[in-house]
Length: 574
Image (tube, rainbow, N blue to C red; front, side, top):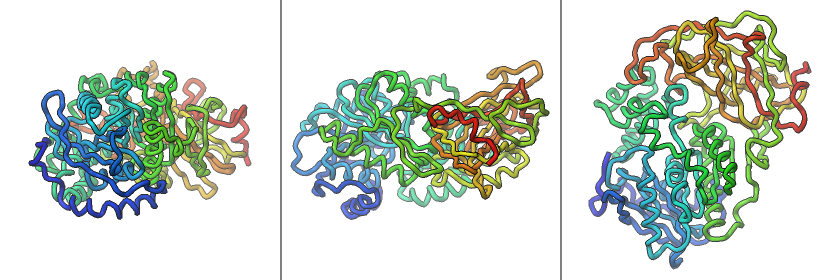
């Protein structure tokens, strides 16, 4: 994927018409998002500014500014998804109408910018753009950066090295490294495919139609083996963006090492606002970034809502909050921000809370152990036989709800899933009083498998009085020979983190834990052979045993926030 900058670049079809309707769209989105009123609708847009890079490539950018504003600080938005239409509106006009100057730049190899698009490799181009901005006569003062997902990753790419040039950062649903979200459970298949093929067709004149057709075909192709051939079935030939997913898998692969910016988080000097969602694909790693920033003594604000990656409420909140953050730190106007360090949404009660920090300082670990006959309790398990099930990769355990890139309904009724023979469930007695789980969650499952390569998927659910089981958080771990300690009896202790959560389990509800060996196609199914992801086709059935006895106490650990209350009374019968 490459583009030529300058006069030869033609914007997408309908771009001019879309631009003429921007004031109308701005009114509609302002009302829908609950944004503060515009200071001015008289916005000047300067198109196709040419920004030279270190290697001579030229990247294109558009500048939005209030008419007559003069030199002022600049908000930089770097995007691989274009500069006009929706992205121009959300990150250009809406900010400029509220007194901010914005430069929206197309990253290398996209929408008129020269060079080859190389996903997540944004450090050098980002630093070169910051240096270019500092020399422009219309820029004066600090530079801010804002944006969600990939638009947040480009901020992490430069945040630790740009120094005093940056005055504010606002990455939404993004983290300093993308490998974890990409390869959790071997490969986050559904999210990886939808992002890759949307990138492949996004600049096509018929992009919306082609993307719709691709998404429809992907519903069948997620079951195709080998996975490395899916691009050929969709496009008629291999595509390098798809092949890359199978060529660079390990976190210590040089490809990912060059795109991992976690080591620079502690060097970030600019005030930074993090907006996350409990059901977003990047949340565990984004909260790790918050903790690293706090440990380094940096100024950081954290907002976590009930959102998946593409939830409407997420973009309304993040746009409103990031505009306020930029005005506070670039224009010295704090009127649109709060002084709360951490603000979270608590599920199950639909309530927003302010916290002093994350994880909550007063949180206590509360362990719930799997019990015989499908029980779940705080007591240690007694002597018991293991529970067993068969995982067949030819009929993989399906994914239901949870964090997926394009999901708009992450919380669903799990009862159909829980009736499958390859899903074990462990359920508590009804809660005598409410429990609030706010903080990290992890699982410890003792498994004996007939194969050396298998997955362990664990989900925590909230079961109401009618028996409806709704997912709260989950996680997966891929087990390969040698990665985990396996006893002489063949039992492997698998301990891993689930997605963190903030959830209110009401009195009378029950807590349920699911244990299975997959969630396909959210995660690529484990074929049981350990063969490479892209070429594997052979499937092996796995017979799994989940142990819960005094020597093998499988369970989950929640973080509860009820002062000195340890949760022990909550599971007394109502």
